[in-house]
Length: 207
Image 1 (cartoon, helix red, strand yellow):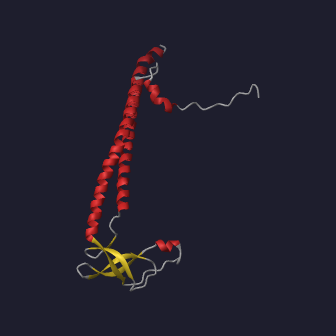
Image 2 (cartoon, rainbow, N blue to C red):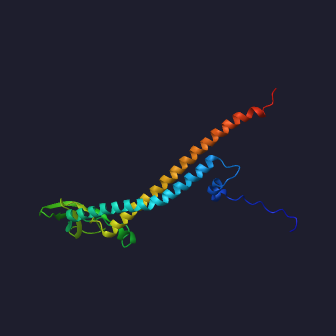
Image 3 (tube, one colour):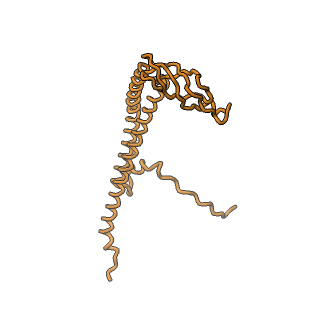
């Protein structure tokens, strides 16, 4: 309808052009604005350059570490047959999907590599009766343990550490930028206080 006043629109977000505004020559630009823009740009380029390198170096180091760990595990662990010494608890929901994933710690008996018979506790399926035989991984001393790391687990953990390294670089850059902005903001406030202390007497009417 003619003559209607259009509804108010929100002002444009200046953040998208903040860096360019601080770098462009204009009457409102301060030296701290230019410094903040260049520092922000430098930190961004540094993060983009360092993050991939850190991810590769840390990921490769983690990969070698877990490969050595898996190699040691294969030398000190073995798969053996163990016999339950007592019945495993029954699951409250027999036949459910939860029962298929549930494991209960039960005392089992096994023979070590040296031929000694000993007991340990192993995670078994619900409802197994005493005397049932299961396959477990055991240490040299006969303690139940997890199987050695697989190639997929090694790769996944290496990639995870590489990703954490890249995120750490990015967070460090963000923290450095936040500290810089805070320091420059305090410097601006101090400059404003000094300028006002000089200007205020001129605005004061003598009585």
